[in-house]
Amino acid sequence: MKIALVGIGKIAVDQHVPAIAGSTDWDLAATVSRHGKVDGIEAFTDLGAMLDARSDIRVVSLCLPPVPRFDYAMQALKAGRHVMLEKPPGATIAECHALEAAARRAGLSIYATWHSRHADMVAAAKEWLAGTALRALTVTWKEDVRRWHPGQAWIWEPGGLGVFDPGINALSIVTEILPDDIHVSEAELDIPENCQTPIGARIAFHHPGGARIGAVFDWRQDGDQTWEIEAQTDVGTLRLCEGGAVMEVDGIRTGDAAPLDGEYPRLYARMAQLVRKGEIDMDLRPMTLATDALALGRRIPTDTFHD
Amino acid sequence: MKIALVGIGKIAVDQHVPAIAGSTDWDLAATVSRHGKVDGIEAFTDLGAMLDARSDIRVVSLCLPPVPRFDYAMQALKAGRHVMLEKPPGATIAECHALEAAARRAGLSIYATWHSRHADMVAAAKEWLAGTALRALTVTWKEDVRRWHPGQAWIWEPGGLGVFDPGINALSIVTEILPDDIHVSEAELDIPENCQTPIGARIAFHHPGGARIGAVFDWRQDGDQTWEIEAQTDVGTLRLCEGGAVMEVDGIRTGDAAPLDGEYPRLYARMAQLVRKGEIDMDLRPMTLATDALALGRRIPTDTFHD
Image (cartoon, rainbow over all chains, first blue to last red; front, side, top):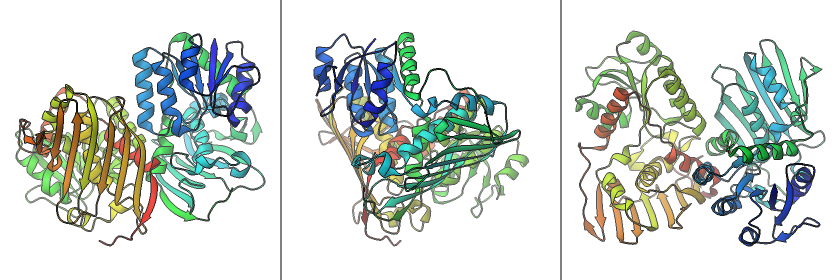
């Protein structure tokens, strides 16, 4: 199936292009980007021009930042194309509902991807937790923003999510592996004085079974980077490390990796499946938790940030 | 049907108690409140004690502030009671989903009330707009917080909504009367330096038909209080004034008032209907728009607020 990639920035070049190139399902047939291109692939600078010129391309994958994404997604749906969305699927909950409703009306597939859910050991962790009683869960997501988001000014602007841009990856794993839904009960957000979005966050969640659930997100981490989820249960302690790539039970590495090699190849395999079956996958739970935390959180001014 | 009222504050005394007293459907059988009471009605200070003692009361109406409401609502649902929620139905979107899921599992009714939707002319305005093409819609919601919320410190704390506490009433009307769903595209929030929630807000919305939609909420209004929605259409201009009590088309008062007298009597009539039919009414669209605006909005520091 032919696919067009819209928004040729860091994530497209690092992840989407190789995942499409390595897939037997997909053929990268065009790109749309103001500045970026992919060698040997027809390049457009305007989505409307691509949709008009290439009626043979039935699927569009959007990897732009969240704020402009809605207009592009709606334009593609109105032109009868299936749509795949980088995370988060939009800048607001209501616009994601509108996209889902539009896709449903038109009989098109739409996929809100959460790449971290497809890290190697997430499926194994979900299976392991299914048979346990949860007592506590702690998310520690600490990285250096200067290393992972150099010069990306939009992350500090309204809708840019701040530290919830990586944090939502953790939330996507937690909502995937826990059998029960959780919700934000309290949050503290550290907001640099020259920014609109948090550089750090501490969140407490309500769990229906009374488990203590908390998350710490921090973008000011020098040295070792930490992306870990630890779940204490009645039968032992599960640790998902390295963003879901490694699983330990009571300190011992275990679990079988999900099939296929890598998060983005798994996303594109799933999109192929959705298009073939005419289905929609629009799980907004990670985004709802992030939006709730941003709306409800206590904002604490902190040091000015300079890239 | 016997009903218990939980949270005996200003809104309970001003609106809920008279609406229940004037209804042929309902009998106020108990109250639960730390401090408040209603003359002649059995008073509890603890919800659990009331639920244990009064198994004859099958319906609970909650008028506490949004942050503590979830725990009370879930406790009532777990005890097999139908639940009616003052607006907004909770402090987060995710907790409202959890309440709806719990009610559904237990076969109970739950009703997220939006009292302003039951203002006299809202139904007539909805009917009038149904046959038109919308060009623009402007919400102007300006009131004096000192007059309407004296001493209510919780409105300035996380989850207290600030000026979205009245503003969500406007959003509840807009989402009711417009045939199409809208979403927040941009927002500016004026945050007093000693508060966590906005005292003023300017919001731009996306409309699927391209109509220009904006809202101005302000809690710093001296003199005349304004709660107006103006809709410009292909066949004329509709104005809903006084919070939905008065409707004008091209400057001329028109429309027939909804049946029953008053917003809260209509809410309690609707709740009686839901319980009899075993139905759920949990429309979260007003809250989604408010949460999206609070999460996405650009925060602008403004003067310290003193009650």
